[in-house]
Length: 552
Image 1 (cartoon, rainbow, N blue to C red):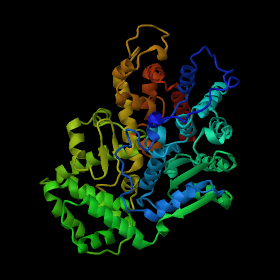
Image 2 (cartoon, rainbow, N blue to C red; image 1 turned 45 degrees about the horizontal axis):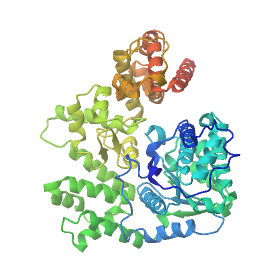
Image 3 (spheres, rainbow, N blue to C red; image 1 turned 135 degrees about the horizontal axis):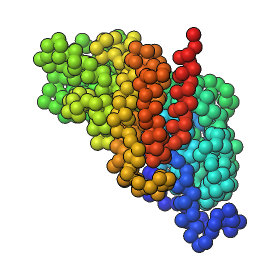
Image 4 (cartoon, rainbow, N blue to C red; image 1 turned 180 degrees about the vertical axis):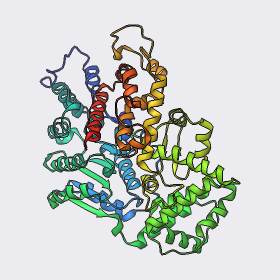
């Protein structure tokens, strides 16, 4: 966890009465770690986790007014325990959230932070939100760590309990027991991209619970939330007394301030290219207040290397614009994608390249958890060279790392999947069809690879916890683990594409044949992965699909 290097505040010795529930034998710290290890958490949800470490902070002398408003709220004594920063996609919410998280982390006042991300297993839903917050809070104070470990001991299955119980027992009650000198105050909790958390009711439930932070005394908890102004979140705040929260709409920030900040960004990112005042003014005009447009354009230009100046000229072509911010963003995405497939190709070759693009990039934007290029090529049964070549010119919109391929910004996914935005049929990704392709790929891979005793244990009844994790990883590569965990979800998401795909559920069909031959192999693999409960849920989903399909 990222908070591991944070030195805990010096406290008094542990309260003997508190230690009663623990099998104390002089190794108290060891028992604390034992209880914490039982609590599943999203290690990569933190702003400075290995997955997020290269994401930018606000440049010096930018977003000054917004950051000052947030700091003033966080350090004040008023009753508004929540600050909601909202704005449309690409307005820089996550960069501001990272900057605030970083500042309060350096001050040792960051209680916890959670950066939601759609398409990432642990960060796209609420299941590990409060447990992750609890684990991070244990790094702040040794006394707080004791209280949280006690809560885990008293509620052994807390990770399977409701969000309300997790909030109450793991966070609210431990914080309420602290005295003023045992922990820095106010503590700040940073939650980014709440709109990317799956489940409208869960999102509203989280907001209702966070509002209870107002009752904490003497330790104060400040909750900083960023999101798009999606309906579930707006309704969540509408039902909250106005005295409990403060909001700031980024779209309402004066345009001259946004343009000033974007100008600084262009000057910093394109400092190796000669930029006149006129060029910067044109770029600012085209950005339409979207920082993601500026970031994407800068990456596109710099990726051009020797033709960077030519790319800049292409961007500037046509001068100032009267298009909406979304239209400008769509235009640069279209330009980048067409450039990635440009070349001396005949019509047949181009058609093949566009099909390859839709299969590869279309899969990347709907994956339930990121995969590496190697794992993706094996899952899709596409040569790795073809995957690499397809992604070579897409670094302006994709972050291609050794262990995963991630989107630079979720607006790229929104663009590709929306027919009204991605108007070229060669680029548009049919979401249901893309899920069908992945469901078919998962079934093919599992049918080829799954077998009895896949890890060659040769010991019937062996416990998964007793098997070395590196041996499981060797026997179950990432693409196979992905297929076993998510094939049913892709099947469910393909909906209307099922019939034409031949994947419809009936006796003698491919799904039935797979389950008939490999059902036990599949469940054995899920058990080795520690995902048995996910398998049970998958069976329930399959039953629901069959019931829906059976309706006249």
